Image (cartoon, rainbow, N blue to C red; front, side, top):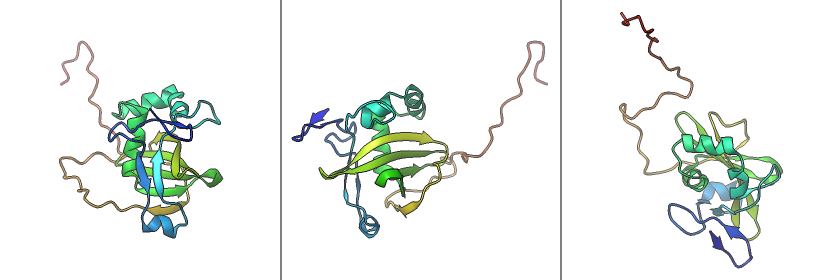
Length: 173
């Protein structure tokens, strides 16, 4: 964790160090009337009216879900979304939602602009499909490759074929 001059405590970014997890920037941001700036994770506090790291960490089921997706921590999860989001949408109370739409799930951060000059992470949510939102703009990232057929993952709506359960007296034929 790092301490800034204004006395607010932030969680340092696990992958690159420093306070910035990502950026809200580019011509689309300005055209949409949003303020450009870094995305940061404040320590915050727990509870339904809470925000930041402690708020996200307080929900054990959510943390279990995040770890089940292969992330080692809440901070790593937030970094992954902040650096890979593909959609910016409207949220309540002047906040925005940044969503990383993956093949079989949508990972989401809710952000709030702070006059200190950054976007603060209010909460982080892993979902199968993001709740309905009003689109502000989509982000086109350069330098990403399309998956090859061997790397392709199943659709989020595909069903799994499970093998027939074999009973103790059955040889499976």
